Image (cartoon, rainbow, N blue to C red; front, side, top):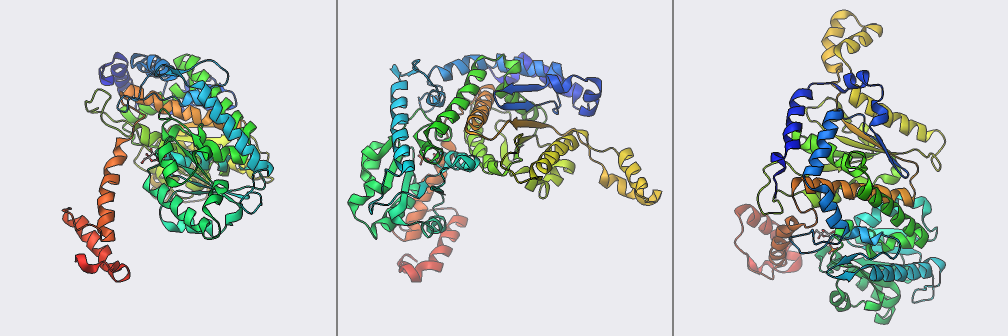
Length: 555
Ligand SMILES: O=P(O)(O)OC[C@H]1O[C@](O)(CO)[C@@H](O)[C@@H]1O
């Protein structure tokens, strides 16, 4: 396996960095009137303005060559072709098959997976229609008014994000609730708002072994059974999983299970049965539009030349900043309230996929890989953390995401949002020089000495990169394309870094230790050898609670 830092394009980029790292984007804009047109891409209803990046044509060419030399075209073909690119788990990563329309076969392990994908989609469609139309009745004969999805991570964030983003398309009778936290406060809060006779619980877990989800599901079932019998569960609980045995053992009839498969990664699963809450809320037609939007991006990713390929361009810009400028974080800032859940979703997608330092061949990378992805709605961020982005010491590349469509917004509000996001991108790029700051202060009537003292605080270095991602409209089609754009961006970066973006072994150690600690906290296991700090924490909890649970005997 070639090491990316040995590739000719990497070496050229290192040279480009040395030659251009002091160049200001202002100068590139001044020298090149076509820059904004050239550094622009369209895919369906998604547009990318990447002109405000610290790149020129040479750098862009070298970034594209790095993608080429790293094997992005071959790995892309392997992913779409169902090869087992998730090498540590010996699995394919076939989320792209889930949104593929038509009958063309997609095979993995010698099996065409399309018939079973279509069968589950049809089952989801029939169920969603029955619930939405009011044919599906609860055990007392009432229609369903509330859907509670119980799941965590990929079994929560995707459906939650899509249902929030596409709220204007939601069924007016259905209230959607999402419970992920094992802190009972969240479930208790939801249960206080809903009625057992009119509530449908969707228990979503790929493995159906996740402690948080199964604990919440058990508590929800106990709550439901206070006023109903075991036989009524069939009307109010459905499961989404790959694990038939565990679903049956939990007490949900597998006839009411919506299946998916081990080649669908949790954080890539919203296109599968994990998307059931999305279909319940938006309806089958809109769910299919979301799939079509993703497929549109898949086709673009599969066919467009690397230099004009939106996911590839976004990925390689990220690599430029992470590996050559030393940026360690990446901001996702949507300027639309409907997208307020989007940063959290992308955070899992990116950080669980590329937060790794062991390469596929088992060697340590020795270079930076996935960034810390964080975010918040941009307009709120402006009044909280943008200060650091403008004048702090860190370089934080940012994706600013906006909808061009003002339909549905209150009069006068959308223009304010857009004026802010466009102005922020300009300010990040342009900055303000000392001469400009000084002239401004003098024009305000300040005397020269006072102005000179204040100027250093009023300077903005600028030259801070942003991508502007514009959606024609926030609708199911464009949301499908937007999510697929980020999935492929993350994939390309993983290929360049030589890591497996589809496993997540890093979440295991904490889970393993928590099992032991839980038994100790409950008093069912004598204290195990831990480090002194952990022992002290466990003892502290036991002392605080031993009188209520009567387990003081271990101390
Ligand atoms: O769907 P499951 O199996 O309950 O897992 C939930 C989440 O937990 C993780 O496995 C991490 O612990 C994620 O990858 C996954 O999305």
